[in-house]
Structure formats: structure tokens, C-alpha cells
Image (tube, rainbow, N blue to C red; front, top):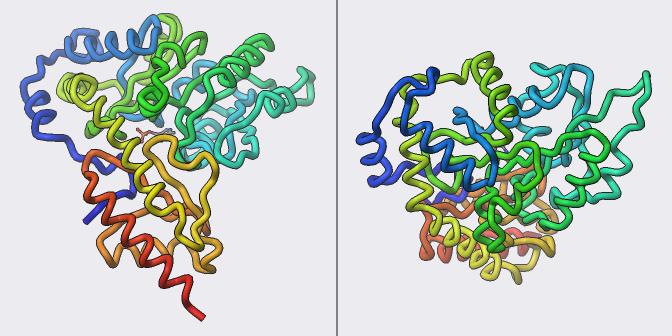
Length: 347
Ligand SMILES: *Cc1c(COP(=O)(O)O)cnc(C)c1O
């Protein structure tokens, strides 16, 4: 099976498992797990932030950030394809009493003008705008890479109006290897940012949320409240440290593989690509012109041992990851081409 469903499907490598087995551990909650502490310091330094906190998931990083930055009745601004809006079980609303303004976007990128229009003038009748979140790279929109200049304009505009600025950096490091712009440059000036360890980096679990020391102290309190405080988490943190040492080159390979897949199927009649397609490790395309639902296209590919993900009615998402090598990508391209041609020739 060639599994392009998601980079979350990656399994810990042998080397990673060995590092986990060897990990020095202590009690995370009392700050005495040395491996977890080392991971937090490492990621904070990588993002150029004062401090970091190890979280069980990226979802908890987003939620804890929203809970620290916002009070009930306030509002956050995100894109309408975002993970926060679509796949976090409405945590902001359910746990934080925070409403979500989702800006319409094509590939997950909103503009400064949209943010200007979205931030509300403070008045008694309106929710108070409190946070803008940028997803770098975009997940459900095909791994689009935000321009760092645009991110900074939006950050500055928001902060000048009393909002906080947050980066959902689940795949920030894919943007880093795609552009050569450092994670610290991307995160500079933002109030919070995090990276996921369980996507392309290949860890079984975990994410690290960073910000000022004060922010992280308050995020820690939410980690406790939400049940995310662990004990000998060094076993998991060791996987993260191992990934940062050994899997960064893999992210570049994943980006390259998504680009290869894109080039190999870009001319297939009936498949539609955005001009931004193939910027990092996720490739989205529409099968709308073939007149079949994305789910049917995904099922047809699966019959040939290629697993892709149907997103919405017409969109297919293929995510390059460390379990699929170049030959696997070539095979996937062949299957996608064959299936599209088959569906395209139906009367
Ligand atoms: C995967 C993902 C998350 C959530 O991370 P988990 O570790 O799976 O909880 C949040 N945002 C984006 C953009 C993601 O891709």
C-alpha cells in the first residue's frame, strides 16, 4: 500500500524507537523530566521564542493558545479551511466560549484587506476581536506556503488593534525547508506558535507550543486543566528530539515528492490544480471535471493500493510522507492518471 492519506500515518522509525527506549525520564509536571525539558528548550530556540511547553497534540496547542489569549465572548479570526475551524470539534466555542470568524479563502490564504474588514470596531453589541491565527502551511488547502511578508503585515495590523497573533505551525517546518526562511523568522513577533511532531517529523505523538515565558506559564495551566499534563513524557519527547536531528531532511524529501507527484499528473485531463499546488508536502486537486465524487475517485485508487484522501465533495488530497519513497510516488502518479483517464472516458 502506498499511503498518501496523511503524514500523520507515519510510524516511528527504528532509530526513533531506540531513542525513545533510551530516554532519560522524570516527572514532567514538576519540571523534572530532562528529555521533555530539552525538547521544549530546543523548539523554543528553533522558533526564537522565550519558552515552550510539550503538548499531547497540536489540537491542544491551538486550544490552549485560544484559551490564554481570549476570554469568553471574544472572537478569533481564521481561514475557512483551517484546522481550528473544521476539525477541532469546535473546541474554541465549546471550551472557551470563543466565537470563530472564518474568512473565505481559496487556498487557505486570507489577505490583509480581509483582516482589516474582519476585525470589529469595539462596541457593546459585538464580540471583541481578540486573535488572528495563520496556518503555515495550510493543511486542507494543499500545503500552501504563506508569504512571510504577508504574515508580518497581518501580525502588525492585528497587534496594533489589540489582537494577538498566532501561528498554527503544524507543518511550519515544511515551509522552512521549502523556502529557506527560518522558523524563527516566520515566528518573530507572533504571540504564540507551535510545531507538530506527529506529522512529517514522524513521531507517534506530540507538539510543542511556544511563546513568551508568561504565555507558556498560562498555557501550562490550561494543559493541566485539559488533562494534558503528563508524567514520564521524556519517552515521547525523545522521539521529538530524534526527529529534529534526523528527519528534517525527510521534510525536504516529502516536499520534493509532492512536487514530483504534481508534475507527473499536472497534465491529466479532468484533474484541476490551483496555481499554488505543490508548494510543500501536500498536493490537492479537484476531480470535479470528471463528474464523480472525490470519494469515488479515492476508492478507485485504493483498489490499486494507493490511498489518498477525499476532502469535501470534489477535492483529493495526497500527502507525501516518510513512508512513501520516490518509487511509491511514481506508482501513485500512474494509478491516479489511469483512474482519471478511465473516469474521463465514461459515456
Ligand atoms: C494536524 C493539524 C493540527 C492538529 O494536530 P494534532 O497533533 O493532530 O492534534 C492542527 N493544525 C493543523 C494545520 C494540522 O495539520
